[in-house]
Length: 327
Image (cartoon, rainbow, N blue to C red; front, top):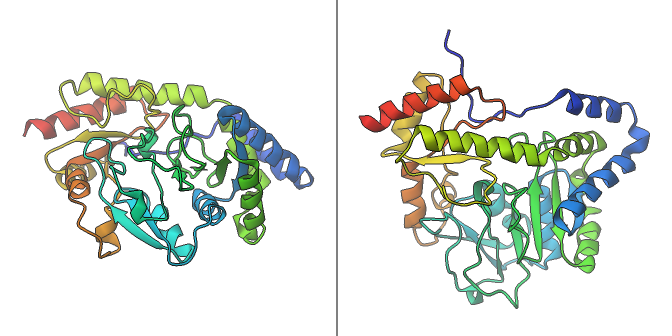
């Protein structure tokens, strides 16, 4: 029987299970688990940390702390997870969908004078390079997909992380706000108090902490999988294949017809996915049509890259793609 190959599945080790079990039995040590995780993230990023229940919660609180008011125009990229768009509405502000660069898939050169701020998104483990100035704007980066990338937090005032089930480090949920200024950290903490359901629980904190301790080996494994894809599909075009700092959270390959390859993969129990659906189409905004985003969506697929992906299964994926690309 052919084994199903998922796009991504979390790898929970025995150490992770033990950490969760101990935390579950000691709710009295709630604050200790949160402090340990916050200190780990502070050591990793050299920034102040505010923990939250999700990346979405982190982005919502960070935008409020940044001073986003009702009616403010906020630029968001056409390719990103829905939360980047939706949290602007949570603030009663107006998200404006902007096209992305064909190479980076991220916000291209925009005129920030037309917006109160923008939300740069660091996609799929790659860091965002700022093509615009922002001296008069408080920038909040959506770095939910970029934990472990050394260049992510060098420019913005705040950045958020996600520890959702499919991320490099997972708690099955959870998030964090990374803040440069102590004053902004205090603002985030004050807003967090008004949303009790946005607080991270200690059991998830214990799981995230356990996984975070082996972040380097997780990234090494992801890069190894990327290397095998590059060797097995030599001559094909991969998303930002030469980015040395990328964590390779997800691996993307250019194909003639994304939907056709995804459908063929389903028939052989191999899961591929397209890039994030273009926000302009999904939410029927009145913003100009993001032509680059549409082109990207039609021609790129994400390849399976679970940490425990077997070599035989990866070889099966490569052989399948070779057949698809030869037709």
